[in-house]
Image (cartoon, rainbow, N blue to C red; front, side, top):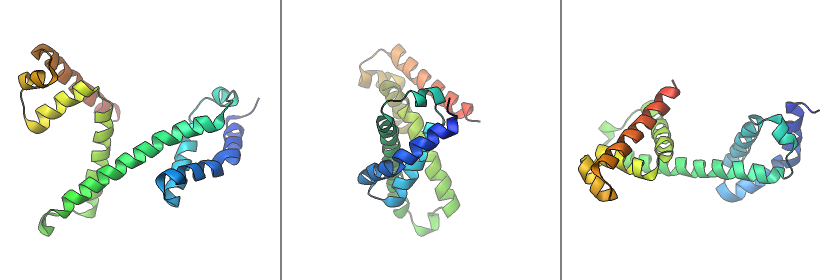
Length: 169
């Protein structure tokens, strides 16, 4: 029986260069491709050794993990780009410090991931009430559901957010 380290080491040796090349075609940046390859293998290390030993198509698994990481990478880039555009529109006197910028950016990325995990109707109910300030009755109208259902959507969204935030603490 192979040890977990030897299984992952074998996968790494056999497929790392291929994975970096595959990722490079998607992200068009050598450093990002190398980072995403390392993140992919970190995720592989978190898997059960038995599952890895039975793996027939290691590149399919690496591709699946890599695709998810590439999507996350693109989303982070989009968020960062939008945040930097917003900052560029601020008067210099109101620009945050580099530390505050980094904290805000990390918070935005975490918030995006949290909102992405919500069901679409729940996400809409939460965002419309919080960002647009509309009432639950207006949410119900927009979603074409009863007020009670819109209230449940909002409650579920808030509960999920609460669970995610406080599960990390």
